[in-house]
Length: 410
Image 1 (cartoon, rainbow, N blue to C red):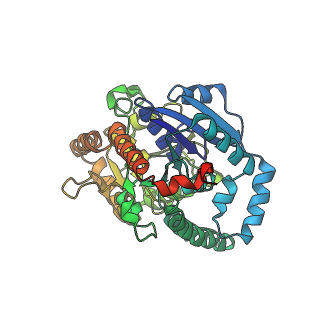
Image 2 (tube, rainbow, N blue to C red):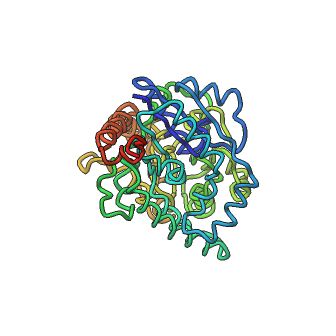
Image 3 (cartoon, rainbow, N blue to C red):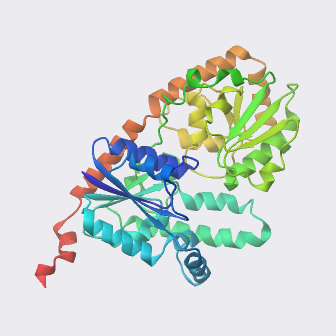
């Protein structure tokens, strides 16, 4: 099967959730199929970036977006009903380049990642198309609205309304649909949302393994870790909450906090102190996991599955998080997720103290976490589900959809 995957960002380096999901899907699908990748980018990719993507695909085509066009479209988006992010990522030259490549390579199916890319292929009726919603983006925007500055709340509310409507409307343009979790599927405002295939994220358990990490980096003080893209609003909010609201309630003495992740914004950088280290980008994130005792993710906004938690679990690191995060991890009712939960700073601090005071309990939860990830989070299995979605979408192609472009009928 010849698969064309289109993404709003280059799927390398793996510093954002959409890039990580795309990269591993490309890598595994390309083992049995021919995967071509079309990506938008703000700048020309580095040689290393192109090399990494081409190593797991047949070919890569990058369209560099023009900044002036982006801002002009965003200004005009006020008068449109489409989401602002759809306008931000859409440019006609990119659409033309994609159409030309589709004509050249003749894919059997197109995989479109995120609704923000749907405009590029929603009217390409002669090729089966699968939309990976990934997350219920509208729900994530709705949750971020509560934390936005007063002057920006109306923008978030408007984007939420537009996204919610667009997620429903675009459903009918695609032959197949995928999403990351049952919880996110339930948030798509379409009457047939149960037809969306749930394709969970995986984890590279051979890479994220405790024995593979640099154990000599272990700290002599109890260490709490939070990691992720530190310019992403839900992560920024979680980091600030960890340091300012949870840390003061922890009773264990000499606790140290490590905040590791790319692009820390000023609100995160200001958290640094003798007790709190903000690292920025770490080439090998396993080093941060290896020197930590507990992973803490006090996330209260955002959607989807948290890759950072999957990584920590694979590294046998016990995780303290919220029930909000748990919703993205519910696979089977009879197989509980080994996460320690709290829905207030006091509850989260209590869970942290409980783990830090019991070495054997930390190790036990770490082993259970590793076992759970190995059982449920395999990229090969999840991409097999995605492949089934491709086949189903190709079978849904009818004679009626074909004659739309049949010039012989004229």
